[in-house]
Image (cartoon, rainbow, N blue to C red; front, side, top):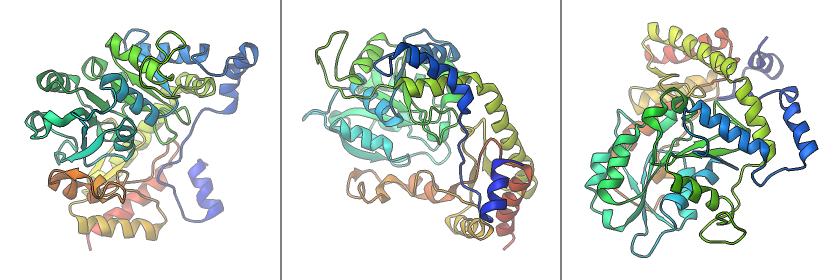
Length: 380
């Protein structure tokens, strides 16, 4: 019996939208024993260095191109400081997609930037670099913060070209793109820093954590300094920074996660394929791995009205669900009054992408019931 089925038996008919599964204690124990021996618990210890080098190998890039961080938001903040520095009076703006998780604009604000929200394309769910290249506010923009929605693949080429063409640094928030980077490093990794989250809600996880990935040595060096109080090889603050380092305990979990990653990813893929097999004959439009990260299953409703009906059906059947990015950043209370372009793509897309339950041990029976609950709304 799977974990989710046990929940159904013991706590009634409820399945969470995502139930993380991290390495068992015995898998982490060997790495923790190394901490007992070394007594190096943080500040770039041996386990953090090993995790960074193993991640670099997984991405087929040189050691030193992956920098661990205490969280995905810390990684974002460090990447912005490394690539663009703090906001200035002349260039105070950050161009940010109106459809993304709130961590992105909050990280930019921590670096002093004022948000300006940009629309996304309904097909790619992301900003269009050609639109950004002609944006009327470019002369006041200090950084462009790009989001790779739900782990979708954003090739470096267009964003490198945009940065070179405009002179504005670009940072890619690819929080859920661990699998994409491992599968297609040549296209997705380059000089523009790419930020990963290793939060418990991500497919690859250290419980909490993140990383900055860049092949530009200057960016990597600046990121290391930014995550360590601005210390650049010496115990003296030479630039902006904060305490954003990954601890050795997080690294221990990450190393154990890597040890079992092939098996975990295969389990995710089996669930994704089960969703696909049940959904396609019923005419449901689902987005699952590898098109998106394995931790997501997204139902794309035909309209906002049908999305509402689907949510009611899921509620009645005891299945949790989520608009992972809300209804757009401009509808978040804190960002309601920030400057923005018109956002028709965000308005059309945000209420229609519904996150469905996912876990690497989600059973076929539960998936079938979820799909049946959604399919029933199409006939109403």
